Image 1 (spheres, rainbow, N blue to C red):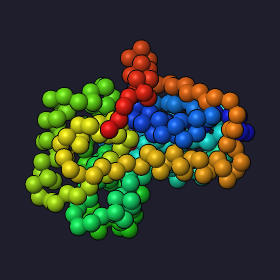
Image 2: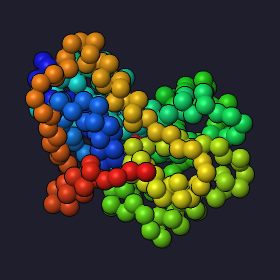
Image 3: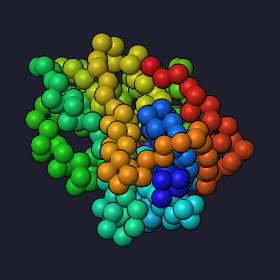
Amino acid sequence: MRSRPIGVFDSGLGGVSVLRNMHALLPKEDFIYFGDDKNAPYGTKSEEEILRLSINDAAFLLEKNVKAIVIACNTATSAAAKHLRETLSVPVIGMEPALKPASLNRKNGIIGVMATPATLKQTKFKLLYEKYGDHAMPIPCPGLMEFAEKGILEGEEIDSFLERTLAPYKEKYNLESVVLGCTHYVFLKGAIQKALPQIKLYDGNEGTARQLKRVLEERNWLKETGEGSVFMYTSGDEAHILPLMQSLFREKIL
Ligand code: DGL
């Protein structure tokens, strides 16, 4: 079991931001990444559709004989983690917007939660919000992940998109911190921080990597020898997406 790879999937290349943390924490592990770029975005689809696509993503990874599956996508976790945990024989690690740490560290302002419309609509987020959302404001960001998918991490186009999306919240609320509740947004941190100067940004990537380590440790499934490898697959245009994924894997993030 130890020597089998770990499967990771996302609707596209956003989950590569999580893959980076996991690879850094577990450098001896082999990772297989699948981005369903052909069907991205998930965040504006129905829960049933996201579930159906996530089942296919997991099936692709299971065929590669993975020992665990990481859903490196907040949207797919909300729609499919429960089902995948109940039906698959390997452990499934999911993600959720990092509202808990943001709320535990809150001083006196409002916490914005930037995520896809689907993530913010689903029961999983509603439960998290009931627990930690007293001073939080959901900020749905349809259209934002597309910048990362196209490899546009900075520039005028994304700056004005972010200004348009965030201005109403900046004007109305005393934002103290913002949770990046979509793995694609982590690649856009530089542009988001520019639009929200002085505001602390949270993401769940490191927590997910640690959770993966815990799950493997518990089972005694950590690979302890050799150098790890990373293989990437996409359902989209390979010639375009794979080089982009590889460069994002190495990209310096704020
Ligand atoms: N990267 C995804 C997330 O974490 C979803 C983006 C999308 O497909 O809309 O939510």
